[in-house]
Figure 1 (tube, rainbow, N blue to C red):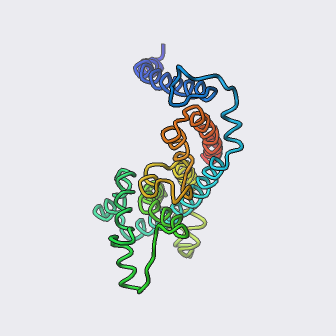
Figure 2 (figure 1 turned 90 degrees about the vertical axis):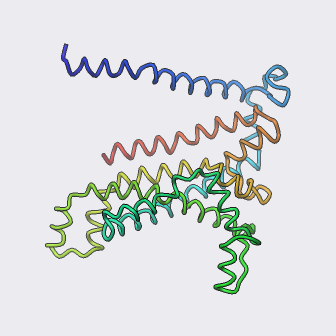
Figure 3 (figure 1 turned 180 degrees about the vertical axis):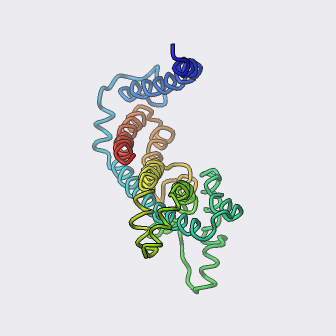
Length: 289
């Protein structure tokens, strides 16, 4: 037997128990959710539950709140992913051009992403508070106007801005790592040929880091689409249901309304919806690589 092949087999066997545990645990949770989604599981628990077939899925199909939460999640996901991708690229390219090697500035830029989203949401809930918050206070003192960042007309962009503050560093990190992988000879050759900065970005930098941009954008869309903790701490899904994401809808259905059957059905639909961008991302990445 080939020694290299033998080492690979032995290495795989060492990982096999962990893989089996993770796959088994995921399969159990998925099967349980599918099973519960076909039952009318209320506060009485599984003992009092009745089989209702596709009734929970039909109820969701005609539910205004469900479709609103899906729509809000999609718009929030697309908006934040696009803006974070643009800002992440600009930051990464500027840092790559001007401050490469500055460890302090690098650490400062990526630090927000290491704060727990719920804690970050709580911090911003205080900072943006209309009465005691620093941000509204600065706006009043500098511009002489009073802005309620949690007003229904402003709340969406407040949430987008807070998400940008925390997660743009994630895309900055991915894109900066991709920029460091560009052969310096390409940039030097383009400079010798008389290419300007814009031409170098369009013809060399962007094509080279395209896989990083695509994968990072898809990852941020998926994370923003199913966002829960930061938004729930900031607004609770309100005012009313104005900022209710699909994850908050599932939480409310399960723990506020006590309808585990309906929330499980919503969770299964969310899982199926998430498979599409994952499949699309993997297909695009295979093509790019």
